[in-house]
Image (tube, rainbow, N blue to C red; front, side, top):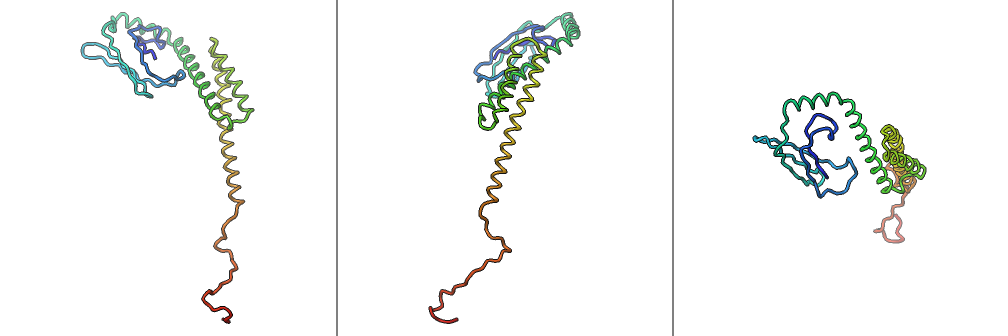
Length: 210
């Protein structure tokens, strides 16, 4: 994973000043948005910035040092702040579009994985609905129409919810059938039932009247 360090006020990293980059290696393959990376910044007494990145899943970490170029003149800082205010709405829309795409990719990954791991727990009609919705979402992700991605994501979320509904319904049905089988089986006599029994005194000699 590539870690890039920027300085600036814009929400979109590409519009800020790039200070450096480093690689966090040894991470297992995962869909976008799934890895959890903790990034820390520390400036020492000499004004040198130390940047660290740690994968919370594997514990692997890497660090870099920014030895120069991080300090900006006041004029540049003021210009960057004004620029950020001027483009705040544009940056917000672009950030939301990027987050929507991340959510869509994550939904496709988790839904397809769930279907693969539970092939017998989801009815065929539900599978068909979900497959169509996921295909629509993946096609939208290939394009540049952010509105189409949002619409397809809403449809896919609705379709994916059917999986959980079907699985819980099947589990409830199995429990109900198990309970009926238990109730229909043989049962021990209750405490208040009268049971006829004959008492035999084995110590009495045969043929002797009581």
